[in-house]
Length: 183
Image 1 (cartoon, rainbow, N blue to C red):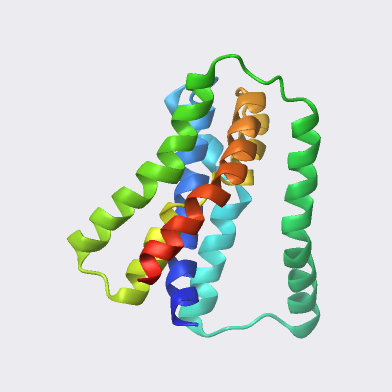
Image 2 (cartoon, rainbow, N blue to C red):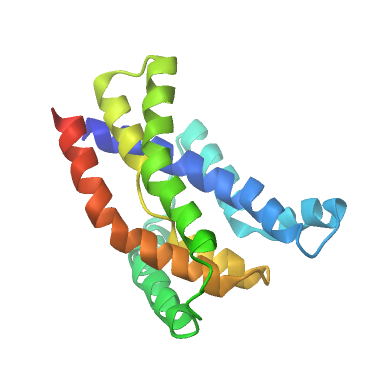
């Protein structure tokens, strides 16, 4: 439970970065900096984060029917993203450029945990926060990156391939990482 609390903080921070800095970078491929900044106002996640902070700080809660609807929608989010990933996988043109595929996978699965270890030591994280942070740093690329790549007309085929390959390879990298962290 304690590790889940820390992992949730790391996850929310990662999502916040994805939906701000990630969206900004993705939209810079086709828009000016000013247009990209204004485009952030169209991202509903930012408003959801603001509302969440307000609700947490004021100790408000949603009415029961709305809460039930939100829980139902949240339960369908992961299956919906996996369906979208499957649809994108149908369109993947497996690149002959292994460098474009392997560099992000290696960075995410091998370099990420090393940076996580260094940051945990730098910030003096306790054992549970350290374990959660390093584990989060070694997770495969998020399905959401495929959705963002499609939305902002980037190379969705390559991004989908990176998500797919990093997820498969993570079976080989997460197991030793978890063993190492568990010792």
